Length: 78
Image 1 (cartoon, rainbow, N blue to C red):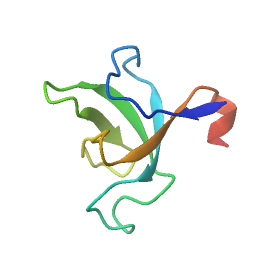
Image 2 (tube, helix red, strand yellow):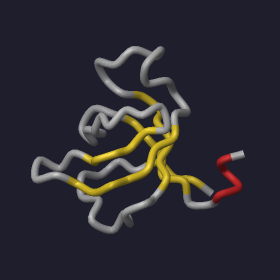
Image 3 (cartoon, rainbow, N blue to C red):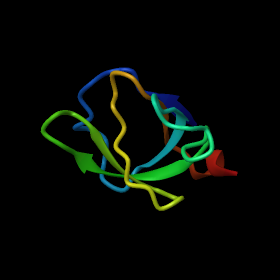
Image 4 (cartoon, rainbow, N blue to C red):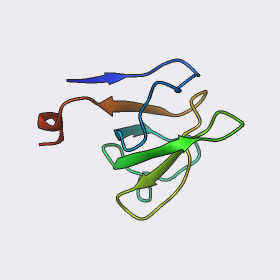
């Protein structure tokens, strides 16, 4: 089961966790579409989540403006 995260401290999110993008402010739906999968790489000093996206992008998630969900169960990827 996946769950949406709405808080700003992600220290409990393990490196390598899979995330699914719901919305990224300021980015085109063509380049960063809803449903795009990525792998969590860590968090920077500003609290941005460092993600390696399946489309090759390395844009960070800004928790204050972007929406995403953490994939808890691999069955949710199907």
